[in-house]
Length: 312
Image (tube, rainbow, N blue to C red; front, side, top):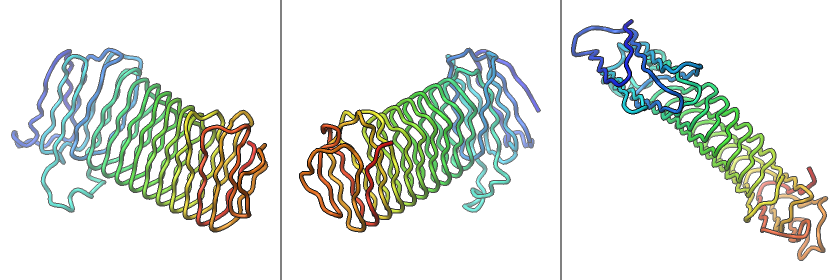
């Protein structure tokens, strides 16, 4: 193991040029709170921790699986670039041999992480977070800031975020805790669960159910593979839509929220215990009416179940 400490530096670790096999490489940089860490890796798992020190410490394990490794620090931004050895197409899927990037940064720091083949795990942090991987899950603790997350091969889980959350996966579920800003969530391979969102929520999936706790803005929820359950807790500023072709819709509407409801189903019943004006249209499978004095339009559609409107 080698260790270097620098304020402004570029360190290139010539793993193959020297013919040496370096199992572990470590570099440390002076890093004041509010800086930024960037990872650009062809392959590898990523683990990020934080501490109360003005130092960024990067440890790369299993560097013998890398063709090249470069560390750079310029004007508060620390960048690590890693390139994978060419081993043929099947070499990309040997997760047991993947390098591990263990990163520790000041508690207030921005992250921009990209790896084409591994899981990303991030501890609690104050900063803007971007995490992208093509071959694993994304797990993030409490974030004082916004989050952008993408994976093509795993689930996404975020404990809490004070800012906006924009996440997408084509191979797993999405689970979010309390979100202080708007939510944009997409998956084609699982369910979506949001505990509490202060802003608007857009949630689309083709492979599972959608569960939304208290939502403080407009709702746009769509699934072709399950049911939708949500609570509209605060007055939305715009129109909302809930649509499914594979299950029921259960929506709770707070008594201080006014909307114009248009609810229709071809596979069940529409029922409501909300305070409504005289319905403009009502049948067993459809309901059009003002709720709590009316407001933005609320469209509910399902072809595979019932629709229930209720108080929280």
